[in-house]
Image (cartoon, rainbow, N blue to C red; front, top):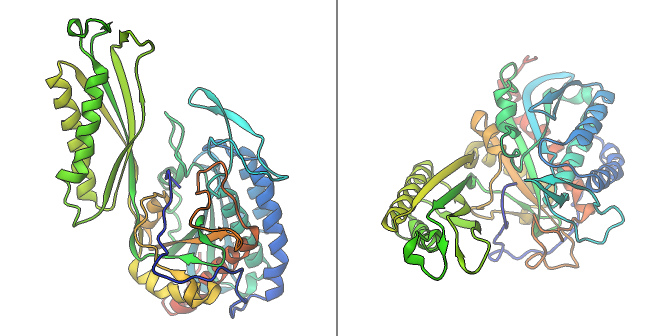
Length: 442
């Protein structure tokens, strides 16, 4: 999930933190759900101890592929570099449903005292960094592996066909590379067989264990990154008038760009955020450098506003630089579109989550300014994406370290909720939509 901080507002709802709910009614035997629970925890711990960065998920994808093959699935490897896709044909006619999990970790050095804490390091942007599953993708992968095993054991009862998508590079491909959901689709993931619906989940420390978060319609923001390179003329700091100061110019550009959202965007249509994350220029106190580089992120929920912000950033940076006798090169990298939960699918499947988590524990969090490349899948077919809390009852979810933190912590007892949710979503969707797919096979 591409986000610096995930903020979820639960203030309007009274929540009693709890563990997994009593298993909902399902044709899947409860013993099969219980049998896979310790395996999910073991897989998650293994992946957590051996995290891999985006497009480098070699070990993870090999374990996933071997697991799916042992379950008797048709397995495709190497899609979008390290992606794995498994196809399971059920014993009864029915819809074609996709389930998705992401596999990549982050360049974060872990600070959680666990026996399976990550000690891994890797090179990222030319630097040696720690690597950690600080966003929970290890849990997502383990949950989907567990759901795959449950369905494989009950293949004869399964109506329709399932596609298990294990996706690399959700956090973004390295500079100069392509990856993630967009590349999987470009390489033909949905060309031969297009699902009727797709479901995905994400764990979050911003909610208690036993709680699910679901918002209909635009749910997570689009995300783009931008770089502004300000070029001046290097000169001694004692006589700035003899050169062109890119630092002062950069400061004015930052202030100018910060007014785009507050003064140029109609925020009654949709929220937007523009944030700077880094600024670099110069090396000595008495040398005005010839160049300053700034990088930042753009988040919003409307494609028209998205385009407007891009145009305003270019205009603001270039004109302020020109007024200071400098120049500004603006590069905007398009990342992920808005993640939209199909309203009809969400309305139809919300009761399913209520069966798994409890009716009072499926909460609408409102808009989330984090971003997800699940959005590419959801542009192709109706999609539904939800969050599930993983902060244990003895901790305050409001102050728990967030996703992407080196102290991100997962209550593993909550993971079984994810397996049950995937199983119940498939069963309920197939039951509700089977009349439209009678006799449908691949």
